[in-house]
Length: 187
Image (tube, rainbow, N blue to C red):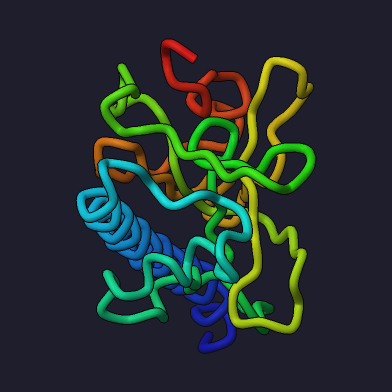
């Protein structure tokens, strides 16, 4: 009897635990977005670039605006040994040119639909630096890509994403794959 009850309840508890992690992750994304927007406010309405800039990656750049750097790690990601597993949409919000010389960041005022454009979110790991606390992740969706790159499905086939206007929400992976949420109107 106890074994049957345990077999029934274990999956229920596992789903509830994952739902709690998903909620905590959403809170992390919201806090990171607040840090991003505070950074922009102090830097002529420009977000930090997504790549390696001045010896630091974007999580290090916004660190002074975060109360706790533990929010840079999704609670559902158990294998992270270094870095962050939240990715940055660098398609229009900070990139390095092909010669790796210039860094560019779109001014917030130029984004015509900030509530419809993703800046950060759950990302599968793409690491360019394994020996530092912060690694670089990308979320990228461009017309010449056949699928999204780096989007994670760790929360019930979806993930949590922060938008330029500061709000964050969970979205199903497939819905993001079929949309243009990574390219702001006017670019």
